[in-house]
Image (cartoon, rainbow, N blue to C red; front, side, top):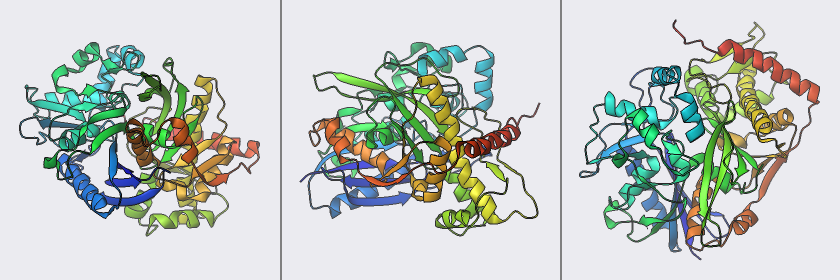
Length: 496
């Protein structure tokens, strides 16, 4: 029986994850890499360190497997950009990470100049430093990167694909391209108008190929066995949507990771931009009739959820490990009217306020660390409700349930609070590595390991289901109080 390997290049570490035809994990390796913070609000990665981590984990995994590897899939932290030299293969600057806010003022300037309608209608995005275009512009104008004929720029998937193929393939696919703010999500092509606006030469950008299909094969120079097909790529959140088998319009998932990302499949027709939400390409896959099917999604990007748990551990020191958070929060029945808004780097959907900052309100002498930890966990569920409410309003579809994954989804308390806030069941799958699973499925679909999405849906298995237990009046009252706390966090970093 063949296996498929997914390479999951996340924000804080990389995973090499092997699955069999039943979608079961048969091998796993993980390695963290360094976070660089050169200035407040700036976040960078060493692209070579990411590549070495990928090679190391993947080589270890392959050597441990008894079965042949049918294909490799790639999923990645989106919006993070790498600029490298085609001749040497070396980066010309550290990668600028999706969390980086250095171009916030530039995005404000572009919005003030009237460019937001063009960005919204073409890309489905908002003018925010979260996306790649202003980062690329900064690299070319202030980062010392020269746009010569040897320059290649891409998101992390393109960087890994280049290295895996020995520099033969500079490509990406629509779900990653859609996050650059340079891609027309209706024509599925780079936008000349937006490339001109941001000063990005077309020759530096990767070719855009379908999400499921053969991109190339591994080269011996990569440090991995030669000839393995690289046949699936998707941005991490779209990969998780695929791995959660959310193939029908209205199907919705949330990944509780460093940030949280809520995606709703909205079908094969690109919808008009929706206030507070992103419209994005979910994937392009074979349609079974010799063509390609493209699905779209509404997305709510929440910048900080799991990172708030890390802050409790590393910043405040009130928990020794992330595993303590759930039991400590469950030791109190509520937060005693304490609310935490985790706007460390601003607020994403549905607010899009890069100047919001983290806010802890409602403290009294009776407040304990258990109340604070519970407030942090509640903030994950409350932010998710904000996004789902907006999705339901703009799609005209009620959410029948939410599929949950990501590191924080192991907390039963969080998922129970989430079910109470949404008023619908929340379901956690047996395989939690849905991002890697989605990349594996995209690759295996192209190579015949799975014949259709029906095979993939049949693999989805339930671990636990959480149904609403709270009266709607009480749930709505808690949410209203939360919105008051959000209002206090807004525009805090504005200096004028």
